[in-house]
Length: 76
Image (tube, rainbow, N blue to C red; front, side):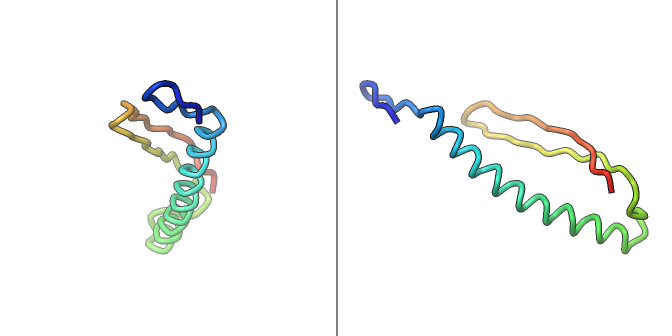
């Protein structure tokens, strides 16, 4: 990190590392929760287990004005 006056400037590499660490945590947690939900839905008869599911992931951070939802498909 470079320091300019009273302001600390985050370098590109440090920012990438920080965001990557966050995303690894989110990915690990989300994967486990999705797998549990799919298994429960199959057991309940809600789905058969060969469908394509549309899922969304929300990412929000009020302090930086970020609020997005990313949609994609899960092919079972």
